[in-house]
Image 1 (cartoon, rainbow, N blue to C red):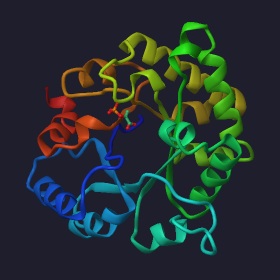
Image 2: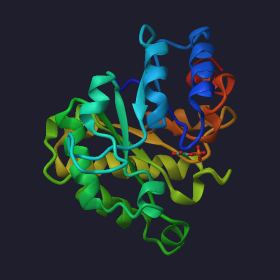
Image 3: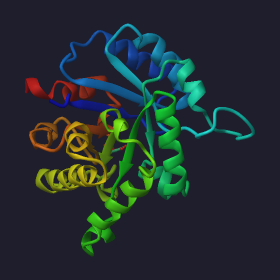
Length: 251
Ligand code: PEP
């Protein structure tokens, strides 16, 4: 049985002051312990958020990292730095990194391998544009991304890695993929992992859906067979909304 996994992505939101207030409030909430949960925060917030949440079951993740441990890479953060703070997850290949900062699959693949080497859980994001969906190229795009981003990644890593299917047209737009379409793509990804690795890998891999998930649609999405979790931007920015997302089973 795969454990459901609900993770917030704060993007470039939350000052340290705001992040600390959020984390402290989270500590007082009654969050379902049968759901794996976490917050991915801007690098500058990570130390404070991890300190506040360290004795809870809420995991903490970074939103990106470089693949090298240290060196002349101005402005970047490294897996070694994340290890030092005991960070759990790192989002890699988010569409905003791919589209705005021009990260390509070759770079993302290096980051995935480095995260795994450093015992970080990569949340690897893949997904198509609206144009690709409308021209029938969504599945081809996602397959290409996964094959390239997981190149030379060992089968054993499939127990750890999380894939987030995030159609770009649904991110931050209020448009959610229908639960059926989201599940179809997650099923396709699961079968692809089965082809690249084996049946066991396809059974253990956790696949999230991301794209305007909110308390009002989380149950319908999480009900689907191939959707194991959500990667959530906007609706993760308020503690009460994050609580409703994590506690989707109680609704
Ligand atoms: C995201 O940040 O990965 C995301 C899916 O954002 P939103 O939930 O705001 O669409």
